Image (cartoon, protein in one colour):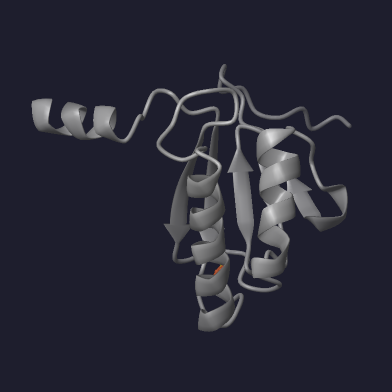
Length: 128
Ligand code: FES
């Protein structure tokens, strides 16, 4: 357990404001498109000191094998907002980081679903 706690501390887990999952699976995009988007995301987060960092825009990133949507990818989901983005090719990553991660503004035209997670674990309101 101490070893895991040390790893978490090294990864700054506990300090993040957002967590981004990017799917690079071949059912929703080509291998090249997925990997290019992932490399771009990693690079920009690192260059802007948003990855493995503290602060209001600190962002953890995870490369996923499948987010079960399996078309229109690369698919990306960002928490805690729970915004699901489609078509997140390399050319969209810089704007995504600036507007969604840094400014906290959703890019509505790229979002196809919203599922914010609630800390009280109650289900979303179904009456709307
Ligand atoms: S392969 Fe990307 S969502 Fe399934």
